[in-house]
Image 1: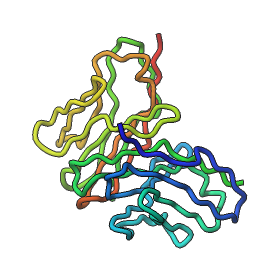
Image 2: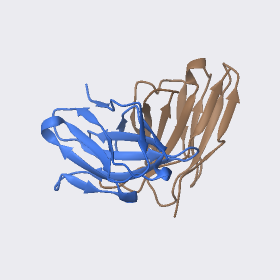
Image 3: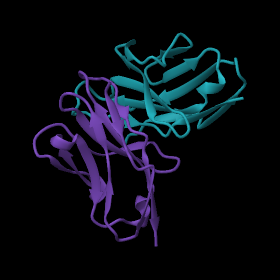
Image 4: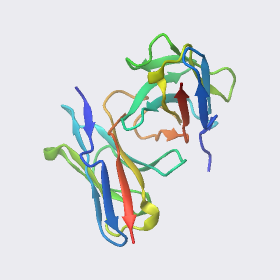
Amino acid sequence: EPEVTQTPSHQVTQMGQEVILRCVPISNHLYFYWYRQILGQKVEFLVSFYNNEISEKSEIFDDQFSVERPDGSNFTLKIRSTKLEDSAMYFCASKSSAGFTDTQYFGPGTRLTVL
Amino acid sequence: AQSVTQPDIHITVSEGASLELRCNYSYGATPYLFWYVQSPGQGLQLLLKYFSGDTLVQGIKGFEAEFKRSQSSFNLRKPSVHWSDAAEYFCAVAFNQAGTALIFGKGTTLSVSS
């Protein structure tokens, strides 16, 4: 069964450093998402991406964050200057088409630790 | 504001016993409702979803959920829990137009005792 993959599984970085989290969505999917979960808190939506542009973003997704689909397979989340509060589990998800009848498939997550 | 509440942070159930995980939402209209499960080291896997029609929906792994509009609830149930069901369970809703975000509850951790 096709699945969403994410790398790395765990990333440790120093405060102020840039990090790039990588995701490979399911190959025929067109909609892509990033969510995060701070330890003990809710899974929160960050951004959705379709047709090479952001279609929706939350208040969390400020200028420190950016997303890109650099080639036909990868979908990346970049944090330009990490803060302690960026420590969280980051989930990538993808969906084949618009509409609620299609399921968002999630990857296993990248645990980001900012020291 | 739109929100999802899972009142139980942690539940322990004996193997073979029945299970009900609670989920309530706050929204003026009928949302689109989902239950996901996350096992350690795994991604979020969809158990079931509700869009319209029959308010009792069946999912994978023997789970079902019932949408109750009057209670703004979408509780997840399973008649007989297996040890492999131990995981974290997330209720989620989508309120907006196509392709948009899911709003998640905080999750309920299920432990299964033998």
